[in-house]
Amino acid sequence: MTAYKTQLVPVSLDHMKMLFWRLDLTKRSFVNLNDCVCGVLGLENYRFFKDRIYRERIIFPDDLASIDSAFNSFKNRVTVRMIFRVQGGGSIHWFKLTGWPTDDHRYYEGAVEDISEHISQLKGILNQQDLSLLEIADAEYPAAIFSGQDNNLLDANSSFQELFNVDLSIGAKYYLKDLVKSEIKLPLLLETLLLESRLETELLLATENAVNSRISCLFKYFSYAGEGYIRLAVVDQMDAVKSVIPEVVPPVQRHEVTVLCQNMAECSSIDEMLNLIYDSRDLFPGMDVIMFSDVYARQNKVVVYPKGEMLEPLEPASQYPYTGTIAENIDKENLEYVIVDDTQKSIKAIDWVLFVPKGIRSYTAKALYVRGAMRTVLIFCSLKINTFKDEYIVDMTDIATAFHQQLKKIRKKSL
Image (cartoon, rainbow, N blue to C red; front, side):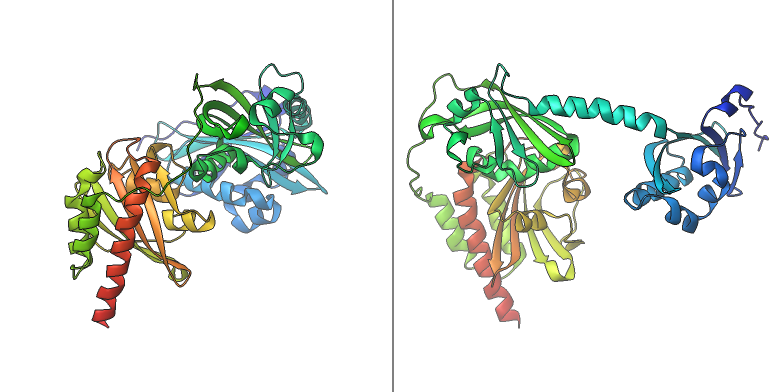
């Protein structure tokens, strides 16, 4: 291997609070490329890179996982950019860490910069921006502020109160879930908002006189004075003419669904039942795959049985951790079912571990319980986005219920 030449760092950079460094990944060694005193880290910077126990002692606890991930990226020659905090001298010091693989595969280089003096200025700028988000009275569009903790409505301008028929002057309590009629998607919406801080989407909202309208909304999540807030602004009302949703009447089950449920009662295995549902996939246009998740939450285990064509095969009885699955999401949010319109926009771990690699782009998951514990999740999948509708859930529930009941009988016989 050709010797990697040491590239000298300009002497002027020694006066900055920035340390340039190089790792020899073959020898697992660390060297400074300049003589900078990088804040607290400048005292024993070699220990920061070599001694994990030392890092655990000085790194702010919330940042330890990110630092560990960064050090793994060094070894894997992956570019790193991150901010972390160090505890020292009774105060918190802020640092920016960057790293990159070099042309010589043996080495990895980077820089650590003390940015503590910039943080207070940055916080001031952000606080001013966040304070302006709380001021909604003069907004030219309907706008409201909700608590980030319990989604309680804290403030709303007059046009928002008129549009949604709320009156804050009487002291009544209102919550975001009371306005969103697409309630099954609310937990996912809030999860995405916390991750991205900004989200523009269309929702079915309950406006004045119990009328439901499809509305384009802009959500922003921000913090001010240590509290989290959600700002909802109405961008556009999509429906020119709003129609009152009639009283919900239980739909009459389709004959094909009834026959399918009856036939499942004659099955003697999971595979037979999945075959029946798969052969009836035309009941839900666009459906390509049916999956059964056998849930064992206490054992942190979900066993998946598929039927249908996917980009990659999935072996029957494939096992996944319960943590991060659809089942956990449904259980924690106390949902009856979940519809995911596009798995590639999801932030659930199971979607990226299971569905995206197999080419599944959208799905509906219906859960059923045994003595209060979730055991069965039936998942109707498609290779296309936006395939499943809320109207399908009645038929899907009947099918899932028939599957669940027959499964109990099959397992009872096998005892």
